[in-house]
Length: 563
Image 1: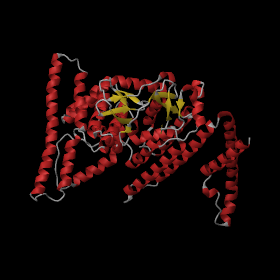
Image 2: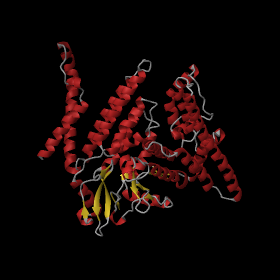
Image 3: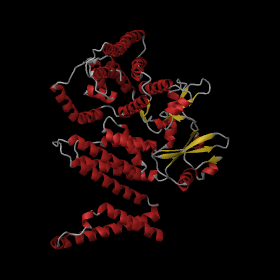
Image 4: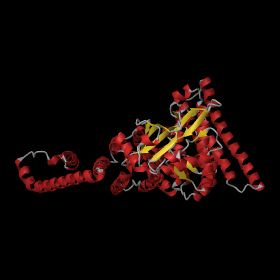
């Protein structure tokens, strides 16, 4: 009973800090203000005090009956509401006509991102997962948000031995020691929804046991309702910022992620889809030791794809690793249509193949997948190929099949950079018309991107997330593989794979393939030609000032068509 009273008192003090503004506790500066405010605030204070005491009593009761489940939801709601309010106030304080508006807005972006990061870490669970999701959509959010929230990839909730045992008692009816020959309670990895432990089966097989946090299922509904409520609240204040549709899609996928039996099925399907790639390995699922909140998998020794030093220490080639990784992703997107939606470095391991000494790609965490219908795969492939060939009519037709109106903006979202149909143009300076156009695009870009994302098939939202994540890995490795060409060739090949394969269809496809390869060769030749020309100018001392910057812009513009 003493612990309940002590807990109620702590909750009361915490909620009082959240709810009662500081000025209510400060002394008035004059006697007149004291008299004027005495009756005004006294009744309000009594009501607040009574409400807080009632909440504290309810929290204490919840601790006895429900193991503080609803109490925690209440505290997380208060903390989240406070953060959302502070962020809204900061943005409302910005003035667009202020000469320093852009600089001040960046400061507010960073401050707000830091607040979100802190709130997600304190609330844990679903909040961390949603934060990770927002960090991945770097084609929507400002860089201050995505870089700050990316820190959530390596964060997790601390948990006790008793919590792990609670999950096993409820799901298996026995403790881990009774199920496995050995079970180490020290986690070897942790994420937003679960932790991974090392264990050994009775036949001596070493396994990885993924155990969900014990209170996550209970917290899911209330926490998700809180996040959606706050999003709706922000939308009332800022009419242009509407992420509700993203959260609704995320909710459907989170329900699947909480079911580890479904994750096991996803892993087995992934292995079947990629069985032609001998260097791709998916850990085996041990169904006799798997439940909805416990997943037992084959133990894999490997290193993260982002750990460059360890990869080189194994004697593996980054070019070989990237070639295999990009081929795997391209096959999922353009061929099988069953796409891993979260291939961040923590979910992709690299190991050395004992037979040939080359790299194997190990895919982990199969909780989040996206199913691409055949019609979307074909349309996406056609759009990709048309982009490489600078075929504006082909791009427009393929985009229309995906219900996208602004096909150029869709290309920018898909390839993560501006896309133009015309070839590169080299100018010595920007005209005033260029400056006006850039300013107009910068102002309208957010609304256009959001409109394009709402138009396109929902499955492509996670496909773009996959592409962005793989693109980041490529940049991390120094772009040692021509990823754009590899993806483009897969897209072109998939068009034939989804055709009737009649002799006439094959001839037409072969003709288009030759033209496609010609376009790739021309683009690559232009890039080399620009580079040669620049080096020649510097060699003879005739290179104009700023030539390297201009040439680099031209080369980037030529490369963008492949991406």
